[in-house]
Image (cartoon, rainbow, N blue to C red; front, side):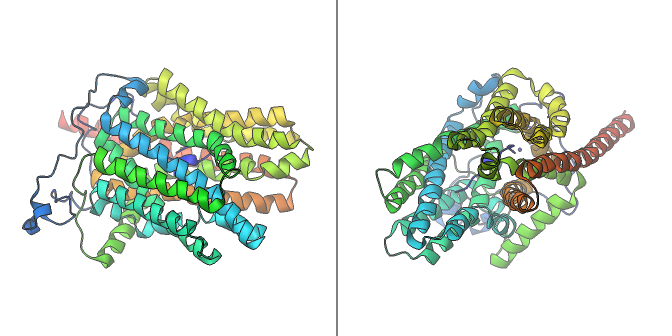
Length: 482
């Protein structure tokens, strides 16, 4: 399934000046209109009043992290958690399936139709349905036990890939199946992101765990497409889809037997109630000033940062660069992203990551202004690496976000967050293409850098106001309590 962590400036894939206590974050008031946390329910998703069935009668394991040594720091401490190692490996397998399926399906549709438009549409369908799944199905992430949701989503993707590999599946069927995978993807990614807080806690380990998943996603951009292209030299596109079936099925098995059973975060009724819960979750997230501002911080930068990647091929043609230069232009931003993540996760303390959020976010697309001088390949690569490296601000932003969202709607909030990440990238690519029809390519990219910087600065002003208001309210409560 497509992963939001594949964003050029990562989210994609979710810090205060001091690390929170091992038990989690300080108590806070719930969002306006949010219902109180539902009582624990059985892993089947039904309330304890239905405990007559055997499945419901089984004891429910505690949803909080158990046996996690909170004394370690850095990426190594995250890998000491057995459940995270399972989630990490499952994520790696899912990414392999995503990369192979995207390449194989695009080639397959082109072979069947000879239409570049339909071939491009096949790739675009990996972005567009995210908005549907992320808004209408977000309630699934909180209503049902997380492990069940994750396994079911993987099985849906494996089944869809199996039907794609079937020789009799027509082109229309391939596109429908592609949409089916994209619709469940935000539910999977949002549920997994929320589950990381159960596995790693709400503190620095959650931040580093999210960072590791993003690093793997960006690495997939570097190695995955090359490996997928190499695979297609030995097997047919439908044969390559069989590899995707295996990777999704293996991911489902790992998550089923390698992670603990935890209760659902909320309790609901029928299908209509699920839709209402999903939309209500979106209203709660976007209706809260602080959470809305943090959510937009994840979305705005990628909206503009995708422009140079979307226009890499036209730009290489504009400057007369050789075909090998296109690979450099496509790889530069992921390389910068990986370097930035590793630096922030390994060399900086949680307090420092918190301090660099706003400054790095402010300049996150500013390097794209170098395109205004119509740079050669070397200078363009520098601009793209710098743009990717500024994505290190998301480690601190992840911590702010998970602290701001009440646990009872965390699954819905993170599903909406990941859906928005993919949607804005699709919109950004489309807008970049439109701009390049009206302007020279280098001006279109530079314009994205300029407009993006202005938009981000306006947003950061809102974030500063919200944070200052929160700090003032906290000080007032302290003085009143004293």
